Image (cartoon, rainbow, N blue to C red; front, top):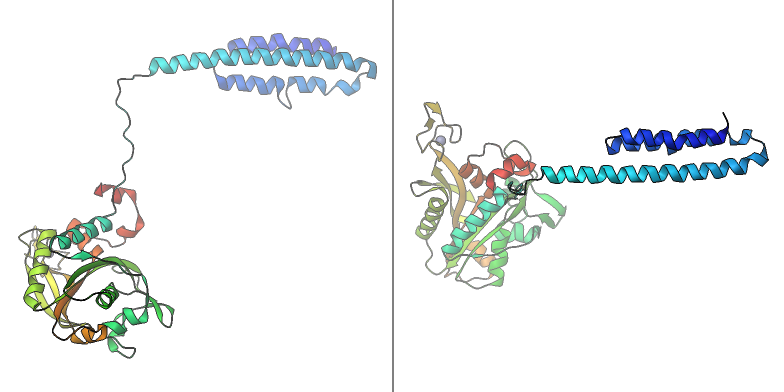
Length: 344
Ligand SMILES: [Zn+2]
């Protein structure tokens, strides 16, 4: 067939196709089919070299005309289809429907518990202080009555940065820093991240602690008991019982570990006749360590021997697990929104 006749047949054929096209997708199919790089127009023009050179300009001009015509037809149909689609969408739109609520974030349970604990202690007259996570050996150990050869250092799996710099293994160095920069009386709590070389079902290399320290004249073990009992009742409820067991920490003397009556079984050791898995039937769970500050610590920070005081430290994740009934420590670090969303 003559190339010009073939070219001129394209536009009417496209027009028929366009009339039948009912969607923008079909329209795009037609565009590729007729005007695409391997489309009908391109195929016809591919035969141009077979023509005698003097015939080629006329065919080229015809091709340009057809292309313009096809483009115009295509654009007109596209506008019509788009207008129809918009009208349909508007007809379906119901402005009286309620909107979709956006996702609301929530604070992490570790943050919630940290804030709650700090709030309780500030209510008791404590002040919130902080210290660095990268800590010198001196503040992390030595100032807390743990010289280099002290056996208590074995209790801590320390992450060393250099021989003299560590990632703090507890929040206790903030005690030493506070006492070095202030004079008694003082009452502070220090929340923050701590690091140990430890990772299994019940230990993670990073976790959160809160350290507390009260120093002044005449501070006794009775103040310690009263403060911590008020604290656990504020967190776990007014019926919670406490039990102080003798323990050992290098920087307190005497030292104690505090148990609370199990919040899962109410101290009975059983839930619905089954052994309680939280307290392992004992009715008690350990919640924190504490004690009267060792006089050696006062000497290290230059306090007079007239002062006395107490210190305590607790794991934030531990409190959160007991408070919210969370059975797996790893939940705190996996950032699964199905878990985190429950604290909104
Ligand atoms: Zn129990």
